[in-house]
Length: 230
Image (cartoon, rainbow, N blue to C red; front, side, top):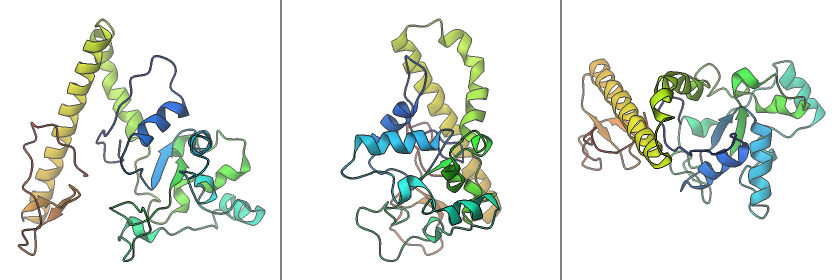
C-alpha cells in the first residue's frame, strides 16, 4: 500500500510472511516503486536481487541511499548525511531508461520502517533510514500498513471461519470498499480546499484542472474497482 493508505496489492500467505512474499507482490507490478519501505529492508533487497542477479532490481548501492563507506555510515549515524531525491517531487526532464512513469527515475531503494530502524545489527542499514531523504523526512507515514492491519483485525472472527476461496473474495471486497471510501474522502477534501475541478491525469493521479485541457480523464465511479494515487 502507499503511505496515503490505498491498498494496491495483496497476497494471502499460507505460511508466515517473509521478504519472499513482499518480493512476489512487487515483481508482479508493471512498475516497481522507486522507494519501498519495509520492516526488514536488507532482507528484501538481498532476496530480490538474488532472484534477478543479471538486472539487480534494487540499485544503486543494493537499495541503500549511499555507498556504504565508513564515512557515509558515520555521518548517517550522526544525522549529518542528507540525501536529495528531487525526482520524488518533480519528474526528471530527461527520464532514465526504463524509469518509473511518475518520477522518470530508474533508481530503486529499500528503506526501513521507522519503528524497525534500530532492530538491525548491520551498520550499513543506517543508510536505509527514511529521515536521510529530504523529500521524505517527516512527510511519510511509514506505519500506514500496520494501522490498516490493526483496523482489519475486527474482521478476523468471521473471515477465519470461511473457506479459503470465500476468505479471498471477502478480503478483496473489504479492501475495495476501503480504497473507494478513502479516495472519495480525499477527493471531497481536495474540492473543499481548492474550490476547483479535480480530474485524473494519464497516470490516474488526482490533479487540478487549471488549464481546461482535454488531456485528462473523467473521475471514475468510486463503486467501480478503480484505484488511483491519492
